[in-house]
Image (cartoon, rainbow, N blue to C red):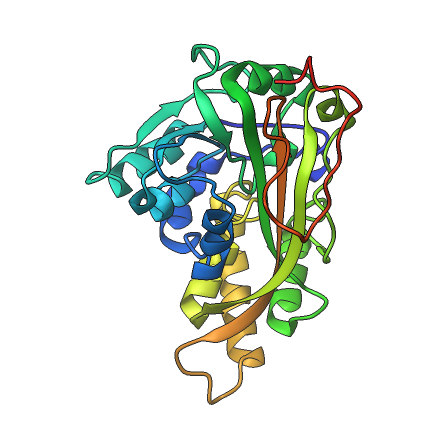
Length: 288
């Protein structure tokens, strides 16, 4: 499904379905610590009903499946959902191709919602009331994002500059360590329970980094086949030039991971952690 949104890439159309095979192969890259921090907060485990928005190829449900949550993955791209089902054949995960703002689930269907790498795509004026309806009182929205740091890692920076050569308005560039921006509309019904940013080292081979970059929105999801071929030729030459001769199996890239937990109304207003920030409203009687 082709999407054009003036907030993203200057309105240049993109379609994740065009890069679904690369996405499935090269974007399942979160290291164990990423998942451990989620589980240690008591989220996405032990029978909880979890809705994964923008599930893509089902990376989050597949990697956390063994911990006992009941997962539903939703994505607007039918091709992404097709890949998710193929990769989850031995798992009881429900997948649905649908818009996050127009879900037909009963009220209070979920305990946790996990938008990962996708929060900026949504129409939050429509989504926030829908999440409020879908969550149990005391439910959680766990907002996740991991980005490479181009100003701290030379390979990431050089690769990013080449993407910008072909997609000058690509808005996925120039990331730094910073909080996830949460639209003010969520303050009406939700409170921030926990916020965390932390760096991780993620390993890549030369080929897997090339594939990861090709699977980004600024390349595989938006360029023409001819443009992708030219980008690939340049990127491979770039990696041969900037990667040391003793480069063998992997290169570690510093990445910024951000996690925000938002709680809806109910008796439980906080998680048992001393780090992070906790915000409360004066009254919670009308918050889910």
